[in-house]
Amino acid sequence: MTARDPFVLAAFQYLGPNGTVGAGWYEEEDRSADFLTLGHWTSLARRLDEAGFDFLFLADSHGWPAVDGQPHPAAVREGRGVPQADPVTVISALAAVTERLGFVVTSSTTVERPAALARRLATLDHFCSGRLGWNIVTGSNGASAAALMGEDLISHDLRYDMAEDYLELCLGLWEGTWRTDAYRRDPSTRTWADPDGVRALTHEGPYFRSHGILNLPPSPQRTPLLVQAGSSGRGLAYAGRNAEAVFVAGGDPLVVARRVAAIRRAAADAGRDPRSVKVLAGVMLLAAETSAEAHARHTRMLERSTLQGAAAVFAGNTGVDLLQFPLDRPLPPDLTTDQGLSNLQRYLGTPEQPGPTVAQILEDFRTTGLNGTVIAGDPEEVVDGAVAFADATDVDGFLLQPDLVPGTFEAVADLVVPVLRERGLAREAPTGATLREHLFGEGHRWLAGDHHGSGRRWVAPAEV
Image 1 (cartoon, rainbow, N blue to C red):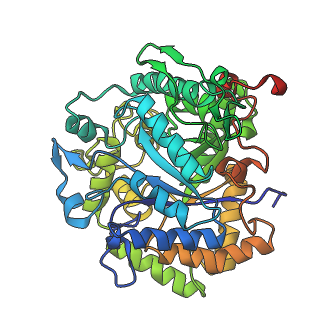
Image 2: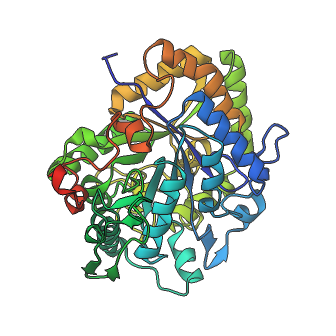
């Protein structure tokens, strides 16, 4: 193993009753069915904070797994994406009971107006003392979400074009409407802010328009940590230009390594340091005191995972109902979708080299889910597997996905993290006070100088 920085460690959750491979909410030791109880989330956040996790990632979608416009029966029956609550509503409560844990919240660029979202995220970054990140999505479960909003599903690449304009408007509000020294709060002169340091933004983009200010002082990070997960061709270009952290699905290390390399090339093409983007792989670390116990847990997890449930989640994520295709044949190599394209493309072959059969795709999805990699064993085995995966793929860390909640995360905290620390692969606590500092080091509160958004920053004369 080559020398490396400590891993970035994050926990994946959505506000619903489930793990990520199969339904686990009905197990006695699982608490995810309590997702509408605030104490469930504050308890989990405290545990992750104590364990030194860098952040809690909260997925979200306004849509759900659907077939022909109707909720997928297996999704409703098993609790796979139905129900799902709004994660923004819990962030302030979680920030109040934690000291260092960051929070990445998901919000789509196709649902809400950019100025409204910019204001909400800036407010949350204040309440989190700079520990907020924004997972920028252009649409998850897109067809059902668009129908719910009474709109047509926007084509894949057009959604990314719109997301560029959306983010530019947000960056203008966060970085450019308040000068860095404008906020005074000076009782002696009765000056709340320097009028010369606050100015209106005029944004006339191809898809969005705005004239006005961010109506609150800049937050500790000014711009929340920018996170993205798309790995289609257009998604890669967007990530290379904009993202500070990117999530990729696990799976075959050779495939993951190609995706990671493509992300770093996209960053370089955008004039950025390729290492200024932290790449995290979605994996499940299934640890127990003994290897036999860990593999028994893995077996029980697979017994709970059904092909119908896997098909429901796949349909919700990609818009493709695998059960409509012959099970003994590969998917058509030219099959495409306007939602979840990267998760479809990972299973597509070419005319010369066909991909896996639909039955194989279903089985793979049933056993690994969206994350694509499960590493089970005793603590040393799990760490060995995680290190081997990171060495083979060049990822910077892991978005840890659960089987049972909070049990999977507790096992990582109690068994795996101590071994990582012994090997110099995990910090005692995240670096710095803000989420961006967790990933890039103390003092890096704001967007890096090679990020195009930093050019929008209105700095005080003394800082020029």
